[in-house]
Image (cartoon, rainbow, N blue to C red):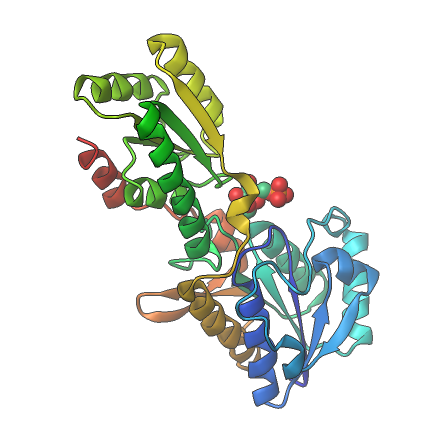
Length: 321
Ligand code: F6P
């Protein structure tokens, strides 16, 4: 192969720039040219392509967001949109496309390969850590640190006022961030979409905390839990009358300089994505497991479910005694 293209798509994640850099530099090392696509699949559809050299990605490894920009594309969901994107890749003599993103982006890459024969390799970039086939996704470690920092601060004010804080963290369909933050932040209770735990459990937990003389309670709720943090807080307030506050951390969790684990993961996976294309692998996501680099068919990354750690879930409960 002589030329590869790279894009970032869907929600941005800290470490995406480190992944782009790794793609550009690995390809350069191997004598392959790189085309950067701006604004994800929307930009590909519109033909926003440009050559990228190793100096173009200098000074980016520490930066949050994505220098290639990103988008959630509706046009790409149509066969016509994908056909135009494929035509741009042909015009630019691109031999393979590296897609850095989450499950929505991998759907886009999968259909592009199926319909137009463009070899596609996915690199997992999403704070949600919800892709099957890799232990962790790029951006997840940083998002957990950001959320944890906020929880620690809320704990200070919560304990001073002896209030209950119900804190919502991101995770559209997944509780990975919530569970890590709950254990690392010493929360009394955690609600995740993977578990059918009723909201009434929160009431028993806060009543128990008061009985034990705790100076307030921290309850972590994943965004994807039905009713979210507000639903949990409303139930507590209505049933117990205890002073309750809600804090929804939101998009702050997507920003910031990536922590070292995300930079290293992004560097390894960006490198592996170029070698995957060189070895003739496609329609796969590169990931990292305990045995090293893994290759998972793109459709399996969203069809198979990556469960949260049940050990950690149990641990969260045990330690809140
Ligand atoms: O997929 C990452 C994520 O941050 C989810 O946790 C969240 O539900 C979603 O993106 C928010 O998307 P948007 O930035 O489009 O509002």
